[in-house]
Length: 139
Image (tube, rainbow, N blue to C red; front, side, top):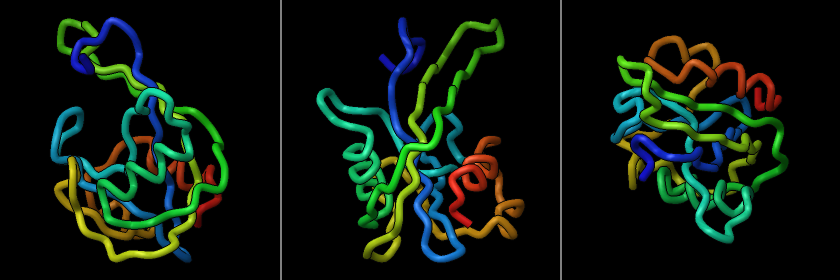
């Protein structure tokens, strides 16, 4: 189970760029339901990070992207009030380029849209989003 796991889960987070914009989704499910973040999710057995990035971006937004490189890892550890670990993900951060498609929220995304760093502050978002976008060199 992902909730209260006995071990960390491996996954990806994708910084998909289109010109000066990057793609974000509004989470429809925990953890961080109702918060904007970069598309991504858990790896499937036998799936490489680039394959997972392509799949997750397509499932959540309808966009087709081309992964370019992995550039860091991100620890996402959510704790309950009693300090017990509710979620623990180790995410490979992948820079990708938009290839085609119009944004349409699906799967576990309540909404999806293109952002710039200038309008990021107007929405609640994951704390690591701006750092990842800058680190990826996406804008």
